[in-house]
Length: 85
Image (tube, rainbow, N blue to C red; front, side, top):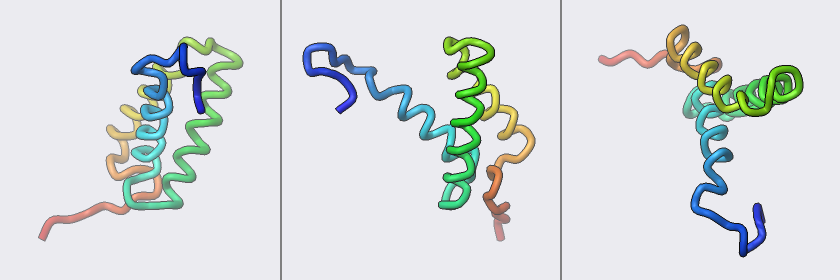
């Protein structure tokens, strides 16, 4: 249970979904090891940003990392490159 019933709104779980998606893309889709590595990397970065910068920028930094990784390595950290035949 994330919240009490009387304080529930439609976007309560949005942050969990966003960070889960970013972690899956970071690691590479279809790779359990990649999802683990992406989740750990994202968690460490979020903790460091929340501690030393500001907790308001955690989502922004997560998306910046996502965009940077997609520009450099679109298949993810552990993902394989798929070639069309």
